[in-house]
Image (cartoon, rainbow, N blue to C red; front, top):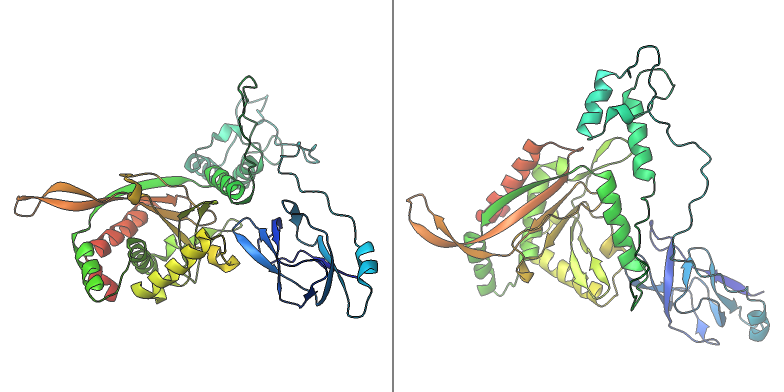
Length: 405
């Protein structure tokens, strides 16, 4: 009988993929595990291995088509089976997955009603803890409906209101139809996932920022020493090593929110934002706190090379617990980054600029300075712990030999 191969699920978060190219022709003998096609997931272009051994009788998936995991992509003929007959038994191609947003369906549950007012008393009752929570989340507690009309607003009501607000789709932006459109870029693949993540971050995190200026004099000297020993280490690798050290001392910044609880994570996996032809990708250095700067540099460069070539493994771009983004090479002095959910923080680096600085002896000298910006989710930690974490990063940059301790 013909054997139908379905699109396999290569990662926990993989739900669909866009066909890029076939790596085999109809009539070829294929073995299980052999690269059969290339497809673009929400993270990278990856090779999809065959899950079947046999003769490729018919290609079902078309180049450019988006296919859900579990849908058929090819039909195979078993050994000794008639290939033509197997091809005829192939199911019809699935309909392409549309990248256009689907119109909202009628909800089975009613949206929260406006906050009730007690007719007899003319006021709304609220518990002190619920009122405090609403204030911390920048919510007008008067807009929060109680679970039971007429009763006072509780913390659970505030949490339910926040969840509903985050889950609700944003209203469509009015579009001026009189403007001429010269090209259309589908909001899918890497760009689509980036858009979804940024929107989710803006809706669901309480982003707060801190700035701090660091002196790179000793970091530059240490990097030069490594270079003289034929050890070429880039700034991003040094930043990864420093942030990993700081996270090991401040574990609350290496955490996430999951189902109304804060989870401190057992691994320190640091992602570094990289600009590629396909958009922004974030290769992840796993267990960075257990690696030296040379090992981090090699790991980082290998993953960057694969990312820019569109050949990243699924593991290259997943599992991050903290992100670093650096636009200094473009001359950007400072910028405020967006948290990469479900992570709780991200660190941004600006350009290195020689700046007049007064020393302890009041003598003015030109120092290479860099501005750091830490953005973190205020729901997870407060300003003082975040400031101490950023100060520790500053200490390690200005005294990089502290990495050895």
